[in-house]
Image (cartoon, rainbow, N blue to C red; front, side, top):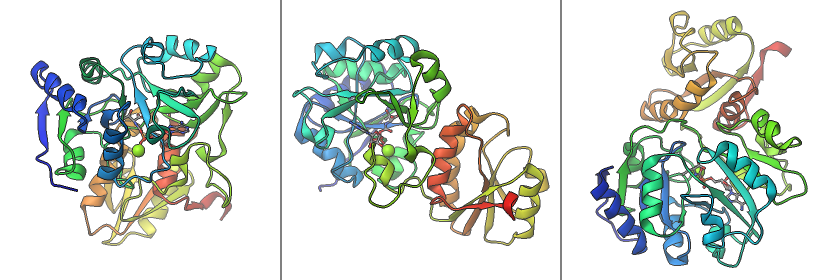
Length: 347
Ligand code: TXA
Ligand code: MG
């Protein structure tokens, strides 16, 4: 792949038009969204979409989310063969916002986007800059998270630059992403709606709107070998920093004493504000113990900081609760830890 001169653009109206023009011409642009930064291309241009896979080093069998700037885009661009009635209910409550819905695709969706599946994932982001870029592009945008495959999703324009500088045409800086973790993914293509990836829209909230919502096994557990992932992204090792992350299932006081017993110059803690004064190792704090939204907001940034410190070889963190947004933090952390959990309650 040739080396591109990647432009880092402020989100001025002029630059939004410039970014839209690049997308119209089949280029790649890193765009801010409220969840994480996305690496966007014209979703209806297979050649442009293929460039996304090349730039990220993404496996070709992992489908992309199509980003729209109004619910009516689903009909206008004929993205779905049929719009499920649950989609309208969820859109009324959560769109624009951090929710992706999967439905049966139409023939308009290139195979490069759906990775050969008969479904398409659709999201209407709430970030004003994302909305403006999609609108100005005059199309809909395929956009995975704008990181190299296998590293944490980017929550700032500089994260995108550090992964993809020279591989994409531009990045538009829209500030730090509010949510900090990728969108909640729900499939409406089966008999019962099923949560495939937890995010800021919680399982509890989805059930309030739809009643019955199943929880896919891969959200909380390692896929058993031979089992096909409902969401292909779930089968890849994700978000894993270079250091070895170990999750402890224990009380707050047990966490502190365990980490201090194992303290040495190569050990760090991915912990909470309340822990830091009691710990004798380097601390990367996610914020208050009780606030999972703040922990979600900071998680990927802290994982990148840990990666930036080559002296850290082992990181101890606590297994979060799976209530509310805690489930999203749990889902990302347990992958960062390669599903390695030490259960101190059983010891
Ligand atoms: O918040 C987000 O969703 C961000 C921003 C940029 O919108 N995007 C994002 O995209 O996280 P990505 O590609 O990193 O994650 C999309 C996930 C993957 O796990 C993929 O396998 C799954 O959604 N997915 C996409 N289309 C699917 C489909 N048709 N069926 C099942 N899973 C699908
Ligand atoms: Mg991703």
